[in-house]
Image 1 (cartoon, rainbow, N blue to C red):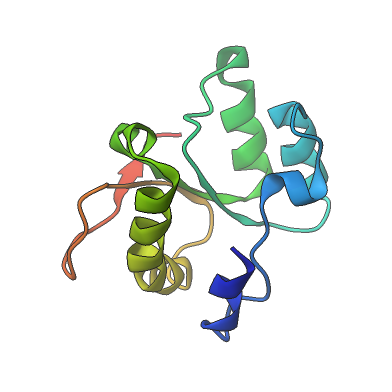
Image 2: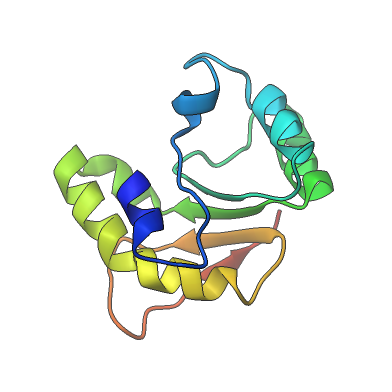
Length: 121
């Protein structure tokens, strides 16, 4: 993950959630703590639908931008997911420069013209 920040000068750092928080940390806890540092860009396979929308509301209030991986990502193995994330990375970085806040679906299928879909959050 950290290697991704080295190829994009506009990306300060890339970390895994467990680098900062316990594996069993509640979403509302880490979302709130990251909000204290300003908005973050988050890539997740989680749909943030637990706790009756409280997670999504916390993300909105914090101003975080979330890229949610399509369900097909979860059916693939670690190496296939890693390879696909590396393919998507330049588009994620470029799109991040255009948006501030919101949620966007990242399809499994990649192409140079593939687009992110806004998700009602």
